[in-house]
Figure (cartoon, rainbow, N blue to C red):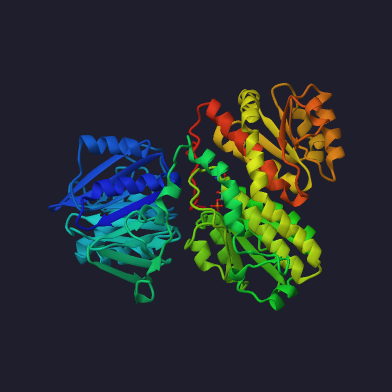
Length: 613
Ligand code: AGP
């Protein structure tokens, strides 16, 4: 999950590359570097740590040149260090005139490394990526042409790559190649950019070309040339991106995560915009590309995702089964793609992914497609690989989500799944009036989320209790079981406190062994059909001296007396409870991590888009 930025044009490259890396830093941030080409010379600058370390280095040691490549790393092979940072130099000792950046994993790197070392190539790093640099340098000795050299090398590689390559012997030329890791070209006026994500090119141009797997591109200031490994020359497919610079900025917020938590009322508005029909008491989801006649024949739905997307899918399971009476299965993408799940022509598969680039989710999509199964996507990032390879789907319209811990994307995914449930239900048995109740509920959601956000001051005191916890249990039933899982993931990934989510009643089948004063239990207990059963579970914890935090309905007269801290959410229709109950849990994770001084937007060991298996 690294970030790549390349540039060739008439402007100085270094500043453009570093600014681009900053926009991609959420993809990986343990080290970074750049290479520029100027007057037949390569300038290499690289540093362990955040992009700001690289920026400081370049202020001290400028890297001239109007052509270059850069990289921010999420380590797969070799720890974060100056040496392992990209770019990697390719060439025999003392003659290295080529620099390469790589996103992905080369599975046969060890055998290729042995082959190259036997021919006298000396390796500087512990990475798999450096192998590619030397292979291209070796091919360049024969071809003299960088584009051809890259084309010769790619078939030797097993695994995934998004590559950027420059050479001191080829001023103004940037070569890129894509297999399994995203790459997009920014088409400017007399300049071209190359990046892992359109966010890095958007400040310079709205015109982009999304590279497909197997494609190689050569860029000069005035030319773009694409070839496919098997199919040969490819005409560039120019897309236009929709990007609003202010939306991607932090504004007055302390972190992207809290900004994105607070954006959720608008997220619901955007996710539902133009998709609710009061006239027909249903949802309008044109992107599914499947007729009502086809959809009526569906007898089973499989929802596939990773992490938070898998948790949203679990909410979707409850919603679709309850509203549309269709059986739903949720699968972790990494499991789905290898377990050969039985799929028949009446099964509809959806892949959920905020980034649209998650390798496991993409692998699941490709597996379903390979088996001849039309697969749909619910994604946030327009033009992402999953969005482009799916046979249709629904965009979240949540705007760029920068915080590594996913928040507003979860809300948008739940909203879209509720829309899907409504649409499928109204194709079947759901009455007009029941459909209208759901339309009303979804239209009320933004205001209710706004209300739920007011719990933040109380959450701050609860965070004091959580910050010293040995572990935390999150417990929820029915529609709130997935929210318990999501709350546990949020706390774990940004505070590093071990947290576990369970269906509430499961607590007595083992997890209750964890209950003591140092291991708080967070119960999701709003007014709903299973409220009284949850009260019984709370009493079980209290009887063992456990510390209890509850999320409940504003005005509840019982819960506050049973809780060390009571976190109120507004009363709401049951189908909205996941959208509301998750708010205090997101805020709890945020304020606990803040208290512990964690790096909230870039937690250790994580990355925003996991583009490796
Ligand atoms: C969520 O907070 C995590 N950062 C992570 O679990 C994430 O949800 C997962 O990697 C899936 O990402 P995607 O939605 O972009 O596919």
